[in-house]
Image (cartoon, rainbow, N blue to C red; front, side):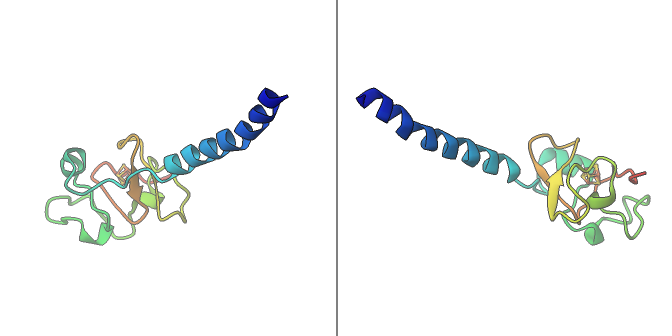
Length: 102
Ligand code: SF4
């Protein structure tokens, strides 16, 4: 009887832990502009701050949120990017691997 009651008490705790883990995943760390990979790709969290002299392919209006490699929704403030596994890029960001979403 006691063990059954203990089992029932454990379930909600395990459920909460799962939800917590999922929440943490959804809030993966944002890529920092001074990360090695970000520097190599010329990533900036604000596309307007792109080094236009260095990255001549940049055009106004380009941003992670409309890039083919962006894994978030267009309206999300941040989302995953295939080039930065386990991290998130800013929806308003940009990098030199930008490819317009079809
Ligand atoms: S590949 Fe696209 S989504 Fe990823 S950082 Fe560069 S511009 Fe943003």
